[in-house]
Amino acid sequence: MEIWDLHCHLSGLPGRTPDERLGKLIEYADRMGIARLCVYMGMEWAYDPSPEKLREDNDAVLRAIGRYPDRAFGFAYLNPKHTQASLDELNRCVRDGPMVGVKLWVAMRCNAPELDPLIARATELKAVIFQHTWLKITGNLPGESTPFDLVELAKRHPNATLICGHSGGDWERGLRAIRPHKNIFADLAGGDPTAGVTEMAVRELGANRVIYGSDVAGRSFASQLAKVYGANIPDSSRRLILGENLKRLLRPILGQKGIRV
Image 1: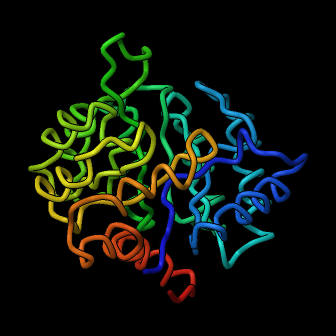
Image 2 (image 1 turned 90 degrees about the horizontal axis):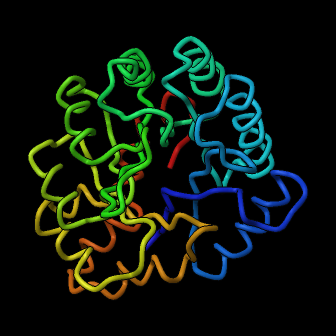
């Protein structure tokens, strides 16, 4: 089974430069048999990045994936508070560059209308859109999205390919929230490798809407792979989750860029 990891970061890794850090990440990935990595958000995270910080973070990822084009894909980090700057980054990194997706984090809740031009442009470019989501019993950050917010966005953009980061954290609620919306896929990354999460995702969504990710370096490859390897699901479902689903979602934009997988 070829494994593609949806959810990787350069932060928290040894190395002075982006390509040194990605090289170390690939070294770890090789131990676990992971073929491809999706990387975003630069060397150090910014909760509410300025246009200058967005460009700096995306430049870091461009440098890293440029060193390892056969092992890693980049997603453009955007901030909906800076609409034009984010559109400019989308065009620079995806339309005119090698990136294949969009990463949205906690600067603004994703049900806000400010996201609409970004989602529309990303959809035109066939870019996959990854949105961090969480349901916290202690209360979310002011701009932190929930799966319910993502559902609102999905209804406005039925042709967009949206990924629900962390399956909402509280995955039992998150998976049920996104279940009716066929253009939303579940990311298994982050959190402890709790028994039952992958089985429920397959039961509620179907195996073709569930995607493996790790959230390294915040989490280990091994602990997150355990969610899939340890799940009581058929090997056919495991194959979809570990790589085939992500390949299918990325194939249109990879084809546009002349990348065959």
